[in-house]
Length: 83
Image 1 (cartoon, rainbow, N blue to C red):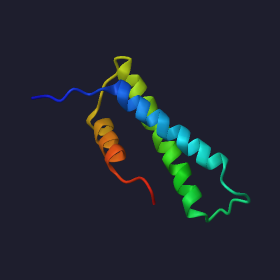
Image 2: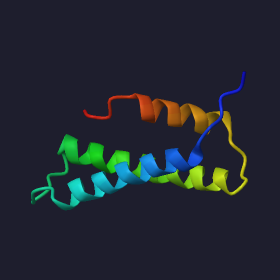
Image 3: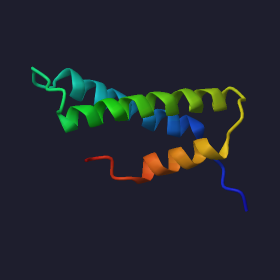
Image 4: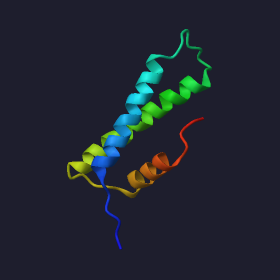
């Protein structure tokens, strides 16, 4: 039995989380130290979310849904993303 993937819902979840990260980065106190782990983690998450979101959009447009994308989505959506 194959499980259907709702890429519209996944896209919505990723877009919401990306907006939350943008707001958190925007309101981050300055100055930002280069060794600030939380800020660096937010930047890393923003980059990962942007890549995943682009891949989801491509998949919704008829692009190939690779096993790597599905694994990354599963990991991202199931992990506790707070470090």
